[in-house]
Image 1: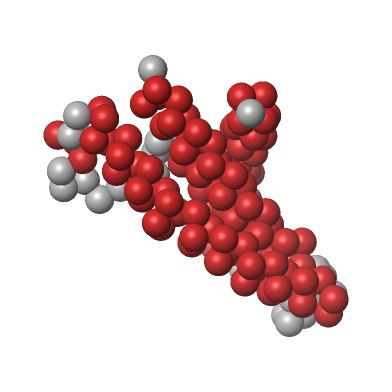
Image 2: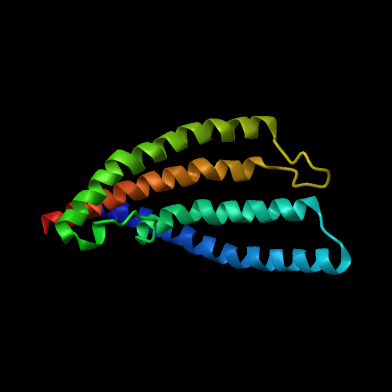
Length: 164
């Protein structure tokens, strides 16, 4: 089990790091797009759609990584003052009641959505837009699956921490 968790966490860390580098690509693309639009009134539908797609990749691949690195949003009214044991309890309950069910629902619904986009060969409705939207839509269930598996890894680590 430890080996499986290690491989899952390496994959999540790799994809999270890749998402960080995609941020740089996105920034360069937006700066160039804004410069060309303001200076020469040049832009294209595919450039704007590519910006959306890159942002989606950064966000979707960053979610499991944020969970892994404990950088996710947490409503912290009392948590900071809790003892480590109580924090583990809150993390386990939150993971079981909220994270895992939500990731499962997201995976199921987005898988259907992505499958429909693949079957239809969905692309941009805009002239000169990106010809295929379905690859980016397939990343949604992938991110949900990674979030679910990372949540299981977090549970396992919490269990290991409570045993020691």
